[in-house]
Image (cartoon, rainbow, N blue to C red; front, top):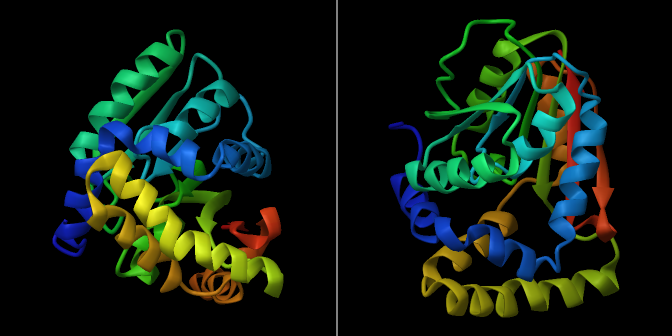
Length: 233
């Protein structure tokens, strides 16, 4: 945990109980569509072992459990116990017949053996990790040969005109709404800055290849304000 900025952990702990509601409001519920598209790219089959990193309140796990079936456990890892507590309560209501396990831990030191998982997902979490090379290397390590990594992340719009409108909303409106909704201005200014400082989509694609992932590619979503990156071990 030492490699992860403790300030970031505190931010997500503070907003944990309102995280899902505000995400839906601030993205006009589009984030749910993005998640479903990411799950489709995963190509998860019944019985496969799936790991969701930076799992937060378990939104990806909800879809993944339904893909692997009732006899297989989906594992989620996150560094915020508060987010995991909210996720556990939420998932127990949504997934009464399915199996899941939530673990507090570091993406930089995953508590799993090599070649364990058929698929790994990470949604809106990679930009919060300081050592992205180490994080991607850990994901590669615990994937089985032929396993797939799928990363859903916010990015910059492709169209110049739309980019100007988006920048106005994202840099000024979103932090204001977020701070009203949570009472924590710092959290949503952090969100803004984390996206603005995150690497370009093409650079992340290159990083996937540098780590060793084959067929590294990405799919832009909603004019490019989010992207799904994926690669095969």
